[in-house]
Image 1 (cartoon, helix red, strand yellow):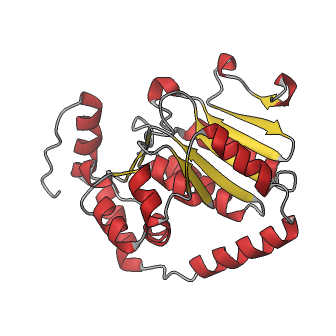
Image 2: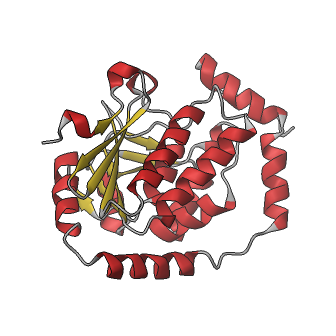
Length: 256
């Protein structure tokens, strides 16, 4: 069991995420159930703090969400802020730069930023009925090149195309068959696996993880893509997509 004194922040405090320690395992929980754990700027900054606290101490970091779902995406009341994009990018890369194993324990919805967080982690444990997807095209937005590369690498090119271009969703069970989800199970199952992984040689893990990330970093930084992405974010369609989402209606995109 986790001692109360080992918990940094509680839901009672109104803090959007907490860090709990179980010996060498760090458990980070997104605690915004009233927003289906959609992440805002404050949540991302807190997660970055937890990543740095875990650096050099954790053998395994487990990321999960409180309540009915893992993370329903970005809180659309703030995604137009450039600072949010920078914070999200830093948080995603923060998981990949840690020398320890990072694991996502997923249940319910992992959409948009939820899928981004899941694929940023080294390993994934998911409920069979959990839901993954990147519905950016329904909002007139665009994820970054890093996310496209990461989803393609972790889930496979065909699934990435269907997620990004077809806005299709996949269950945890479907992705387990494809290898993108490493184990089916609950948070308890994830923590049990994490406790085993924490017994492995940390220097070997750090070396192997860095080697894997070095392969991923050989992606091309495409200027044309960045131009197209910037145009999407600055468009009237992006405003219409966010507005329609908040008003719970179907968006009417014009291509402008």
